[in-house]
Length: 171
Length: 213
Image (cartoon, rainbow over all chains, first blue to last red; front, side, top):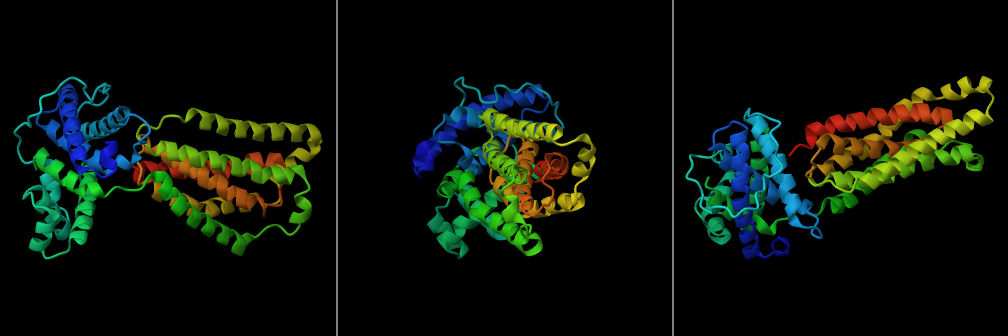
């Protein structure tokens, strides 16, 4: 994560993948304990990843990342479970599971995030969609959308921040 | 959206990282302080006999008792802006020490001043002005602090908001102390504290609302 914050995108991707793997195990267990459908877990994992991304500047780089990730994951999981009407007060000491975890992604239905995408302003939605779903590079997407790379980067970042807020405000 | 797709966007957006919360505070705080100072100088201003007043312990104690907790509360607010929010114990102890200083001032005043004087000193000359001015002077600072904290990720949004309120109120009170004609610790411990508690409560409520993430 230190390398990632310094701008190494390969390191960032590896870091996010490792986090995804450990989050899946812990969140699935928390979701089951809260009496919710197991399918909700991947939605919550995505919410946590988005929060990790948008709030990574609140991590003190001189300290280990583990407790920080744990704190973010707990916070988002408690919030998400409460919002979905799950049993609250479930002990959540281990949302971040350190056991080796399966890496495969569960096959899931349309996630909450896709629904949240629809509520974005068109420019931001186009930016997120082009990069996420079509897998385009900034340069390709900018040409296709008739905008500049810089504007696209701004739109993407704003879109992500808005997605996080939308996911959070939905009740 | 598949999680792999999400990861792709996050990595693509990896170059855009916000500055640390402390950096943002250093940028916004001077604006808030300037607004409060301007507000103070245009509406209240220092009391006319300030040159004589600074010779007295009672007067000098006031801005110190207010500026000290303001610094501590600002540091506390930065700690609470992190989701891990650890290492707050020493700052909280510091705030408790300031409260103890306030109480010690009251006790000293009760010893030094005859009991027939207590009531008059407690009520003071400008209690209402104190209750109104401190929240008004605190407002720009509270707004700036909450704007900064919104960029953070507080584990306890209400508590982070309360720290912002305490900072704004005590910093506002430090300004007001230069205008206020009532120097008795009895007055300060009562009316200043009331105004500070009110602004801290507003900060806590605003925090629960604005600082969720």
